[in-house]
Length: 555
Image 1 (cartoon, rainbow, N blue to C red):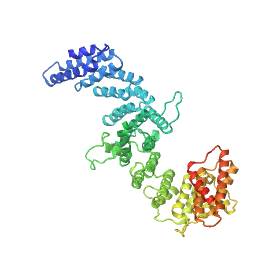
Image 2: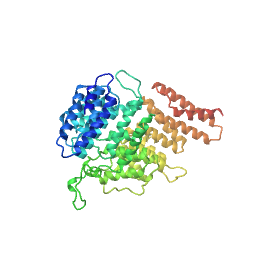
Image 3: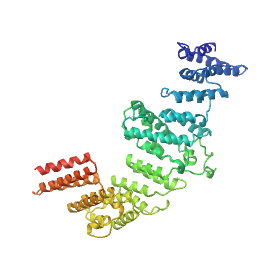
Image 4: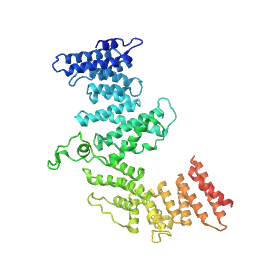
């Protein structure tokens, strides 16, 4: 103990032997105290432990900065015996932690102080709330989430109070802000942080910690109607789109990519633990057990979260079986069960169209058309063209934009009349419902039919019908509407037209090819003038068909 005392008293001197001699002196003292502690007949061991702890605490309280943190870390190495409760340890540790969080210390320093503190004491979530908030707002996210992770695990495993909703809300807002900065990479501005590899590393490690909590069923903490975890699920599923090369984050990245597949197979059910039959299981459900947390104790997910999971399963992972797993859970495993809403049906329909999944499209059409009971999903094995057209009429009447768009693309993929499908639905039957004026009817179109997304989808339908006349008729309708309303023609619509012009002219072998190509190029010139009025430049993906048309016109 004399060697330790000499090292501690040298704090502040130059050069200080703290970093070189204190660890060895602490280890020697620990070995000696453990030897004494093993002798149960010795009445002095408790007093010796207390005196040793006081020696470290006195000097830690009298110093600041690196030396205080180093002394406190060595006190943690000393490993106080079980039951040793000194209020000074908690107070001193919180003071050092607060200083570390408020000052611009090196990344990871706050985590080390907190790790030392929890080895000797058990701070409450409210004790560290101020320090955590400082770290979050300074973008030292990995240190902050390390501390939050410990508090959340203490909550479920030992019944301690969880982090407050205010803290979790602050984390959510800052994580969203950082993710946006990393994605958009805005130029530096006074008072704002910028995207850097260091910021990406902090965000990645913090998201990895949150992902581990989610996959191990420690989240969510609060019911879905208060503040759900949709934001976290979105960040986890879209993480791969952040294009940064930071080798130090490889382990955290791998952890993030493992999170969602694990979470999908153990979604919260929301069952009442009091309803468990004593004959069906040998023990009472415990919050410390992962399976019990998922089945009984975690708040159930919101409809928004389920929709994000469906989108993730189909769009990002292309796993229909995962999608079925999510749908099965929300309708049968969740308590209370919920029926997929219009948003779910639209997601299913859009993804089914992109991946040519006919059965899934039928399922989405029926879910979007009626309110089904979870126990009676009346989905037909086949569907008539008249029923499909009736779905379109209903969607137009309800002004369900995404459903109308999905139905149009579903017609293109599975029902459009063509050489390979002579019994299919003619394109005009769909377009006449959307735009009665195409057949000189005075009936006005539905309001959403003039949405740029629907106009583009309708033009695509006309182009896929192999009818050049119908395509040009639809294009003139779009031009007239945009000129009348002073709206900009969507670049996607123009791209559809130009690609159709190229395909049509490639099939022709007569002398009219040059004339038709010149007409198409005149349309392009009109588009350039139209877009210039709206200060818009043509998209890059339009250049290739324009070059093709120009080359055709030269031959």
